[in-house]
Image (cartoon, rainbow, N blue to C red; front, side):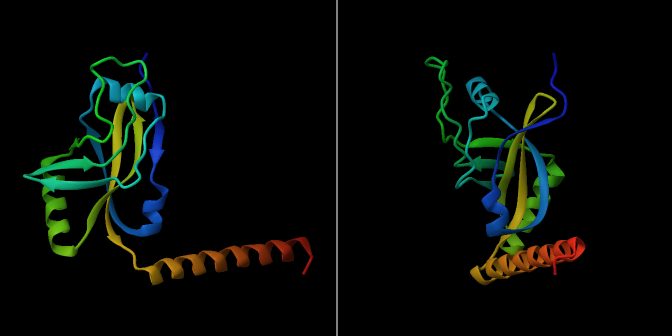
Length: 157
């Protein structure tokens, strides 16, 4: 029976904190059988993972998919470089953007879509520490405003 819908395996929450997301792309991944089985068990890590464009192809580097426990000698290397599948026009756009603007490619999440493994990669610009502080201050201010509105609605203050 075919799966339908999306099932998120792993997401990179730190990426949205460290980077300002400019654009996102959905890409397929070239995987070995034991990697897919390990992902189905929900085992993966995007910590320190990044994507590069080499010779007109996009590769995902440093993503950790642990070895499949039931696998034999055919098991995969946990941190091997994996090729990403994108349309030629998307790759050309990524090449232009990463060269000119100092942007990087960061994986945001890995998920199953209709039984196929997909990765969402983002064209991102690194945030400076003061940008992060501004974002935190803005979020705290929003939270405090929501709290005071809630208190006022309840007639407490």
